[in-house]
Length: 113
Length: 112
Image 1 (cartoon, each protein chain N blue to C red):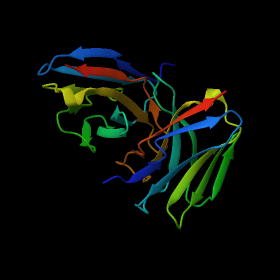
Image 2 (cartoon, helix red, strand yellow):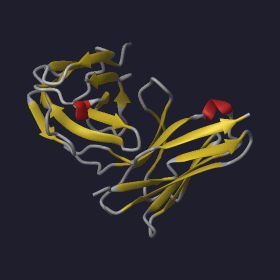
Image 3 (cartoon, chains in turn green, cyan):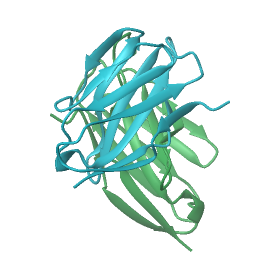
Image 4 (spheres, each protein chain N blue to C red):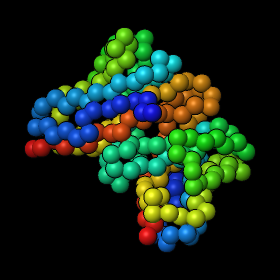
């Protein structure tokens, strides 16, 4: 049972374009939704995160949009750059002791110059 | 400040051999996790620990054992390696009350 579904699996975007990655979840007990960025040969690193009481969060060129009623959230990368080429994972967490992040399957983003 | 250190970085095992992957963190984090990453499968939780001396099973625990004898170390053991355990293994840690992981750089394991 996949608790966090992520799409697309891969994405190619022109430099300067907008990259959009979508995630959906089932468990309404999730209360924290981070996105992690992973470069080849490295471990994932936190990029941006949101809580369900907020519909949008923006940090620089990265924005999370959150739709609580639809149980969906998405990552938007504005003005995509070749340096953004990486694998992106959405995740969800129930914030209580003894729980762990549940990750989506990942999206490999390639930004062509 | 080393963060989360995983050793070894690469390893090739023969089917049936055993090995231990070591994860060490110097941030005094209470929680530690082992994930495996496979193409198209994302990061799947193997085992985790919420404190010294405690461990719990994750999504894919079969074929693995773990120990957390010291707060800073989390060991992942493979008693009898199988080709299906070929993967990249990531350790992560998190402070109690926080929500964000710090990941190690991974161990690439190949079982032939």
